[in-house]
Length: 173
Image: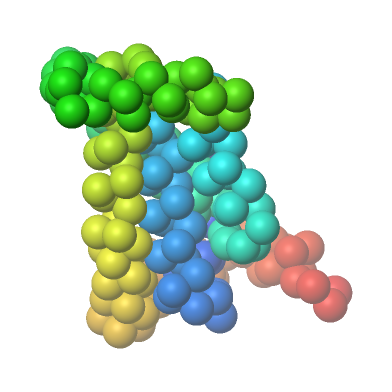
């Protein structure tokens, strides 16, 4: 039931008048939040950005859950990347400064997994935004009309419960 409700909300979001850029920002920021550890400064800042920019929170939450599920199996890779960066001699002073800084210490960049996750999240931020943008454009140009004319959607719209739902959720009545 949860999955059906989520898919219904996703279709509603995709069919809304919201700009593709805004939906792509929600997707990209959601991927970023899903990749970084939640109890860190970078996650808190990204959540604040989501709220400040007023992007679609449902889409950002869905992208966060998706990124959490996919990234779960990559902990060893995140650890290796983080250790590689932490053990570089030319970066010792930088890591010492970051770790001892009053605010930056909350980023947990002295943790190899947290550092690896943050680096991967930063690298994937723009590609995730671009992917979200292209997916929204593709859906609106190719899939939306086909989906709305499909037999399943036509059947669902003909049901009395759908008309009751539209009456309840309509902003004017």
